[in-house]
Length: 109
Image (cartoon, rainbow, N blue to C red):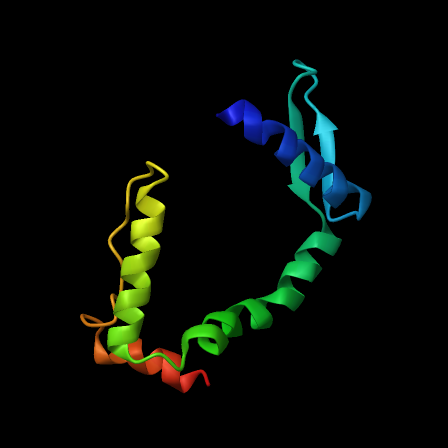
């Protein structure tokens, strides 16, 4: 399965390098190894994206009631179960959220 993703990762890194968001260097001892490091421009882009990424869950899901959020999470877990990956315990299932967790969504609006 890794071979399938290797080509996608290589193309993605190539595009990021073209845009100067990462720097790459071949290993001195093993030319098959390519070391990749995020550039200053890449770090700046990530900093600029942080507020947008922080707001996105609230913008998309902040209007859901606890029961709706629990059902949404249940459906996502059901879909993910088909991937064969182990499921992590949700930190908030909509019903068992602490009041503090539920308020975080409302407070960010």
